[in-house]
Length: 170
Image (cartoon, rainbow, N blue to C red):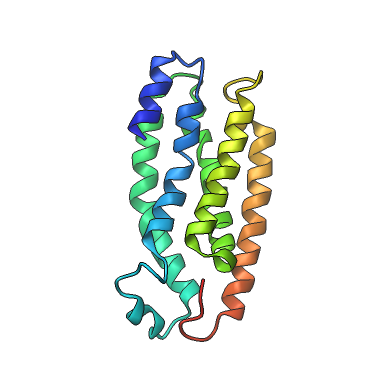
């Protein structure tokens, strides 16, 4: 995050790509690091918990978002550009986390994190080809992120209903 903020500052706001590549992905990568059946030191406890894995993963996600989002928000205040930019990165960030969780239910956390990271990187890098530096955060794109996030939340909600037995993988 510090690198992305510094790179955006050194470019005098002409390119926001380093910050935009990192800021919305910070919560996703934090959540991806917070769980995973193969690498979880308390996997035995998770598998025997009286809750489905989906519920436990959502609780861990909340625990990751609480410290990550404020730090990223503070760093975004240091990025040059329009004032609305300091909050606009939250749209893609809050859409990418449920997309990651929905994908992780089917592909696992590592593959889901890679897919979400590649997808977002493609959006940001494509925006550097003749578009405004703030293109990924403009209103029409924010509406797309909202729709994508809501669709992913619907997938997660269905998964929570289906995931009623203990230890079912997410």
